[in-house]
Image: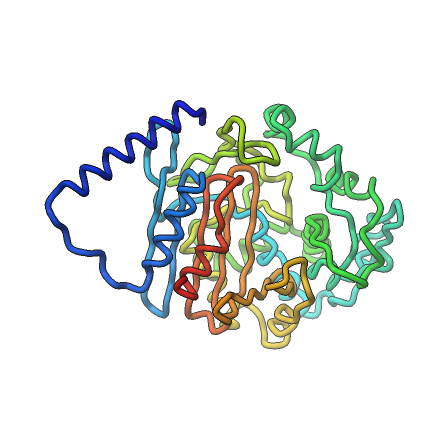
Length: 379
């Protein structure tokens, strides 16, 4: 959005606010315990996020709200029922299926990648014979992240590259080739480095172990049993189900410059690392069910919650599941995810009784972490 449009929207907002202040007195908003969350949502919009949608579940009670707009051209607000691309939140779904397969005796976390994908992980020091499935799921494999490859970034992440290739249907092996063109970060098991390549491979392992597309397994094992009616693993669909908002990106590493509408894209490029679409109510239901033990036996859930130090001081990474310690000492479990035009976060307390899911329809500003802090710590 250009500066002129921004000035117009800011002026319109100011006029509306002035009118509201000049009007008759109205009752104060209910003291429902979400005032800090509302403030954090408004702060994200003030920071440049076009629109925010949040849903919270506390026990049997739900609260949902939006801020900002879902369409910069028309000013249409966001919906609390919006579908959006959840990106790396997909990793929790993939890890859950792998752990279900382990519980069924169909694979072991100690299996090597090479056992399931013989000869696939080779090159520039990568060796699938030395990497276990557990190391894929907790990002201690050392495998290079294909998103970090300079060639991948030129092709898919610059403005010119994105506009030319946004509908590409690259195969996972093509994406893996970007990763293997680089050296590994470290020897397997010796450190932590977040790598989307790990979950591309984990999805392939699911397919080898079951004979089915990994998305079909997620649908059969998680989406259908939990009745997640807004959740899907799209194959080549480039649009979002309704209701949904427009998605915006700068297609650059800065928060300045032109704003692009990137709503239509083929998320198959993210594959098992971030291909899914969902909504806030579904994400709350999923993470609550997961932490309550509805999707995994106790042994596998314990493994999923066994964490290693991550790149963030306040969080530790399990098997597709992040343990975050908030400023007030509360621990929440979940995952975040970012893809062109979408920034999402979903967390729950360990007992699964207090959950939150949030989405920004942009990718360059705002803090989902601040909204989580506001909801769980009241600051």
